[in-house]
Image 1 (cartoon, rainbow, N blue to C red):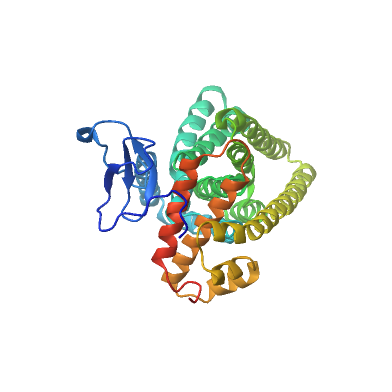
Image 2: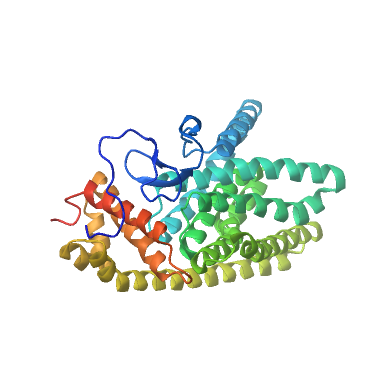
Length: 390
């Protein structure tokens, strides 16, 4: 490893708080494998304890969701189990797409699961409570067309912001990916509710076709605007809260238009309007796929262009450089590896991709951030000697 100013990882140290090797803060958390972004300015006696990747909001949301599902299953077991089974279909359709998007800079599995659970539990529980209260006070139409877009996109957006606070979002694609996972979690739990409401099989088939087959990407697409805005703010080193407002506004507008048209079509039995809306949504989905594919292609091209210089800067072997500059060869090599080596391969790839994004950012460089990312790359390379066939 070339000298980048990043301290070598300590050896045989248990996870805990230690003096910050970069002197950015008095204390920095060592997770047993790599220095993290968590710092602490207090005295040694007040060092905070480690927080699990499963955050407190998600734990509380899980408790509420599990209790609700339990009573639902107990009260109507056959209908509940069918609704849950059908609700898993969008999960199977959307997950491969999100995994494909995440291939350029693989996100940690724990972070993806956290985002999925945030959408299903935190966003789902809070939105259900607020929408129910609004429906009780001013009517169901207001809840569907006004309250739902506002509160659902806000709570889903907070899931993206949580990932940002954990230093998981480094650019535009990260913002879109986390938005997709949060939106997918919310869609799954919401589909449970919709699939449990129809009184007969014909109604259930119609709802299933509409929500699970025709529009499974609805919530990820709405929330993608918020993720896009946050990712752009990170990439340009601009204020995230301010820039997130326009993304949130677009997410709410798209969501409100969709809910409004569906509600009006249902009340007026206007099948033509419903058909046109679905076709427009499909067209929007195709446009979004094309746009995201272009962004992904751009990210891939920029990564392969920067890889040789980054590999040289951070001391990677020549064989690693050759592999990283050939995207197809890199993916083929990854696919041929056993599970543990594939995990380590992803760690190296992700660490280098984060460094690529760091060097592409506008504004003043941040040496502490580069040192932290370089330390992650050093650890990932050290953990796997056979990834590249050396």
